[in-house]
Image (cartoon, rainbow, N blue to C red; front, top):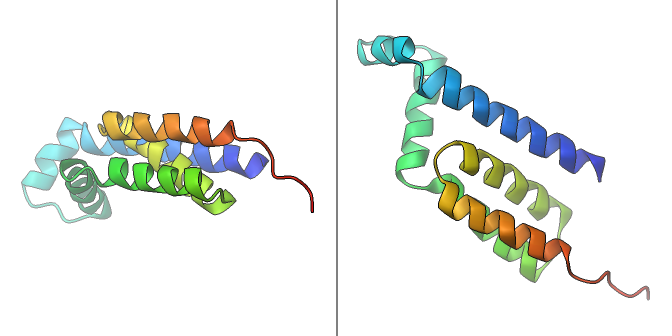
Length: 114
């Protein structure tokens, strides 16, 4: 399951980049408000939209709940990435709850071999 570490760290790194280099960069903010039309301005608008509607937090929570009911490596990876991004990108309440649910889902006993 080393690929889960890779997914988690890549999501966390991308979220840190988006927060500190795109969203909170004042020079880029002024340039985008002044009419600059680049991919960073588009990414900035998208991240702000996702933050305003708590999309990262709700998607992390939904994936963590689904993973709690029906464990799946794909759901675990998606919930891990969404929770990491949500914690960094100001959706900490819902993303923290989903991280707790992910830890709870890892505490279940392994299925019995058939």
